[in-house]
Length: 446
Ligand SMILES: Cc1cc2nc3c(=O)[nH]c(=O)nc-3n(C[C@H](O)[C@H](O)[C@H](O)COP(=O)(O)OP(=O)(O)OC[C@H]3O[C@@H](n4cnc5c(N)ncnc54)[C@H](O)[C@@H]3O)c2cc1C
Image (cartoon, rainbow, N blue to C red; front, side, top):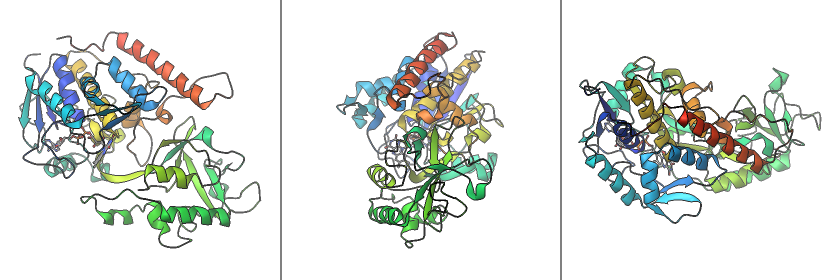
C-alpha cells in the first residue's frame, strides 16, 4: 500500500474533505489547488474550503433533511464538519461559521498532516504519477480541466448552468382543487394540475412581475436565459406569455367545471413513491421569500411545502448517473473519481458529503474491501443514489431533501408532516449506525 497514492484535484469543500479522510485511512494524498495562480470568479482568497457565498451550512435541526445529513456525517467523523463546529458563530438552529477561521483551520490540518502534500497548481488532467485521482474542481472548474473532461465524455453530458424548478411535497397540496390528468388524457393522468381562473391568473401574474430576483453575477451570462427562460422573465413578455407557454391549459379538463381552465401549472412526479412533485417550467431566479409568496398564489398550492426552491446559476456538472458507478468512479475510467458540486450534489454540506464518500469508497478499494453505499433510507445514501442512479432526464443537481429518500412503509393511511419527518430521521439514523457497525466503514485505521 506504500506505493499507492491519490491525487485530489481541487482544494474546495469536497476535495479538502476527501484528502483528510484518505489520510485518516492511512493513504498518501497530493491535493492540488489552482489558487492563487488561477482563481474562479467567485473565490476571493487562496484558502482551501472557501465558502464562496453564504457562511451557513444550513439547518442542524432534526427533523430536517439538512440536519439529518449533518447528523450522519458526524457519525462518520467528517473532518470538515468537525472543523465547522469548532468555528461556529451564533445562527439559531443553523450551522454558520466564521469563514476565514474555518478555511484557516482546514489549511492548518492539510499542511500539518504528514500523509498530505498540498500543492498549489492548476491541473489540466489527472497526474500520471499517482495511482488514483479524485476530481473535485467545483462548479467553476478551470477551463483546461473542463476541456480534458470534454475529451473523455460526450459534450452532451457536461453542463455549465443549472436551471432548477422548485419541488413541493405532495401532501401539502390542496387536492380539492388540484386534479390528476395528462394533456389530452394521454397516459394515466400522470401529472397533478393546478387550475387558474382568469382572475387567479391575473393576481399571480402581477405578483410574479413585481417580485424580487436574485441578481445574476458578473460571470453569469444572461444570454443563457434564452435557452431556458426563467418563469418571471417569460412573464415580462406579456400577460398571456405564460398561459400560452409553460402554463397552457389545452387538453386539460378540470373535473370541477368540465372545461379547460384559463391556465394550468403542471406538477410532475419527482420520485417513484409520488410524495414529491416538480413544478414544470418553473425554473426561476426569484428570491426564496418571493418564491414562497408568489407560488402560494397558484390554486391548490396555498400551503405548499417547498422541499427545494428553484434557482438558475453557473454550474459545471456532469450527467453523473450516466457516467459514474455507485462508488463515484467513472465507468469509463475506473481509477478516476468525481465528487462535490461537479457530480451534481448541490450545496456546501452535500459537497462535503460526496467528497467524504468518494474517499471512503476509494480507501476501501485500496484496502481490498468492497464498501457498499449507505442504505437509501439514509440522507447520504439517498443523495448518492440521486447522483449515481437517478433516472431523471434531464439530470438535475440536487441538495438533500426527503423526496430523495425511500418511502416510509406504514400501515397507517395518514401520517402528519412533522411525524413523517421524524420517522424518516429515526429510520435513517438507525440504518446509518447499522451501516457503520457493519465493519467496513472504519476511519483512522492506519
Ligand atoms: C457563486 C456560487 C455561490 C454559491 N453559494 C452557495 C451557498 O451560499 N450555499 C451553499 O450551500 N452552496 C452554494 N453554492 C454551491 C456549492 O455548494 C459550492 O459551490 C461549493 O463550494 C461546492 O464545493 P466543491 O468542493 O464542489 O467546489 P469548490 O468549493 O468550488 O472547490 C473547487 C476547488 O477546485 C479548485 N480548482 C478548480 N479547477 C482546478 C484545477 N484545474 N486544478 C486545481 N484546482 C482547481 C478551485 O480553485 C476550488 O478551490 C454556490 C455556488 C456558486 C458557484
